[in-house]
Image 1 (spheres, rainbow, N blue to C red):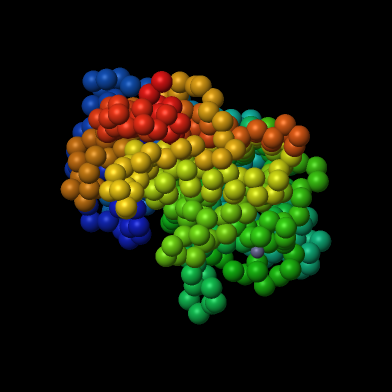
Image 2 (image 1 turned 90 degrees about the vertical axis):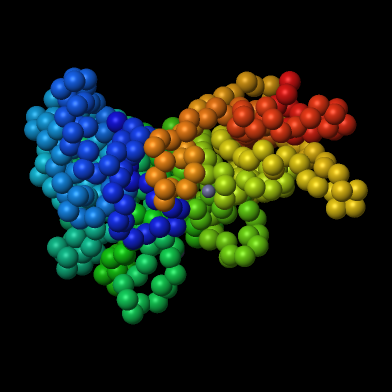
Length: 444
Ligand SMILES: [Zn+2]
Ligand SMILES: [Zn+2]
Ligand SMILES: [Zn+2]
């Protein structure tokens, strides 16, 4: 079950809107209780998964009420059926109700520090979610409890309990954090994380695979800066120059999966080498940094946020993505990227002839026959007006591959276009005139 507040892309303030979306349908705030009761009694639903999204943007009074209704109506005090609860602590910052449920779930988070401190029980989680802010909180807690670096690291060792294990650790990274007033660097950016904190968590919890959730903004935008006054912890960022990042000598993960659906800066840097108006944020270093922090031979990414990067020249975009992905000349690496694009990106208007031409496939890529498809939910028009429901649309994909057998590097780029757009955009004549076009591969 998904309960979310939907906002314009760059919105950051608390809202005055009086509706949320529950399972992609609009529900007025005054109808939420009735809807939950209906689910419980009429439908008799036993809810196993609850994901909330951006509910912290709601007005305080309703936000807290909703938190309590989710507990009382959907989860129940015993939490008998619940297996996955994501996002709720964004409202309460980790309350007793929430951390009691954390004990029962297979997937939970993002954890606030207070919840982390309750995790003294023995349990294997399928997935735990943490944030860059939690790493800071842990670092600052350990510093506050100690007099020197040795004591600090001893405290860190005592704070993360090895009785917890998790198969996948999902790390939420905020792309637009700020320092408190009066400090330098007020620009919104991804900020340094204390590396030793991350490493201790990865080891103690026996993490097998990593998920990175890149998010344009969260309600943890304000940095804690006290830990930066001490030189105890190594500072890492995924958008710092990669040669400055030390390789982790003894960790290895089966794969690193990157979620980009809420990203703006990271997703943009991957697809645009030299942004026209804005300076790059350094995410060209993303993949080499991932391999240094979270050593792996397999990285997958979902560039679902198509409107930012995929709006012109598919050939150029494919080249840019390849350039970024292979910048370090990686060895023993396989990268899979799902790339969702607008259909207009496949052609251009020739200024001289005033005729449309179709783009080809970027150099080094080979077409791999592959019938790919998926469905995506999106809002049909402006969020301000609050449409009644999300659209579900079918996307058709084709796989393009770059292979370097010498370095054992394999890159699959799965490009998706809306089926609807493929049906009505192109005429057959064009396709015949450009037999090697990119989009031609979508028609055979
Ligand atoms: Zn709570
Ligand atoms: Zn740095
Ligand atoms: Zn976008």
